[in-house]
Amino acid sequence: MPKTLKNSKILKNSIRLRRFMADEMTQSALAKSVGVTRQTIAAIEAGKYSPSLELAFKIADIFELDLQVLFSYELD
Amino acid sequence: MNLSARERNIWIDVITSLIIGLYYLKYLLKIENWSGIWTGDIKSFIYVVVAVAIASSVLKFAGISKKDAMEAADERDILMAAKAAAAAYYTLMTLIIAFIGHLVFAHTIWQIFAFAEFLNSPVAVAHVLLLIVMITSIVKGFSQLYYYKRGH
View (cartoon, each protein chain N blue to C red):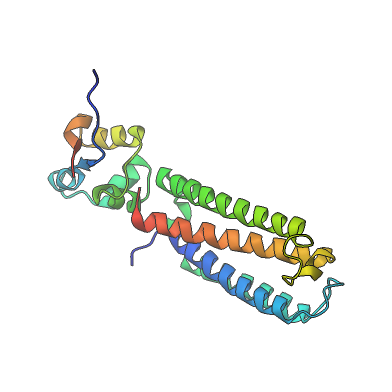
């Protein structure tokens, strides 16, 4: 029987940390690399916006990481 | 407040719509004769609409830097616009159905309840429909700003 997903789980990410580790990359630079606005990157970091799968893969590609390292689905 | 060019333009649009909407409402309330389209002080209303529209365009143009101008809408902008359009659609449908209900039942069920002159004046009906369009546009703008602020 499949596991039931709880609604209290949210999408978390470590983009801010990864930016810091990538020579303090700015939000604008990351936004430009993946083709979105700086406000969208800020919203993702703040957990206010869940990116599309394609955008999530693009961000992971920039940091040369697997998707599940950058994004996790955890309890709030 | 750190707004994108798109959010800034939505704010300008919403404020413009609100000013025009309120002025239009004020114009409607002054009308006494609903038989013709050139009733009331329509000239000054048109002047105000033109002036506000020009001021709004100037504000938008002045606020856009070269960098902003090159910035295309991304997936978040498209999602927020779609959510706001859905909210505006429900508003439009509710108001239109309520107004149709009024047109159909005003003579029968609540005939004592004023506004009967509306039914005999296509101009008045056109004014109400225009007001509904304005309200819908304001709802769309506010919803979009709300979704930008709240996220998801």
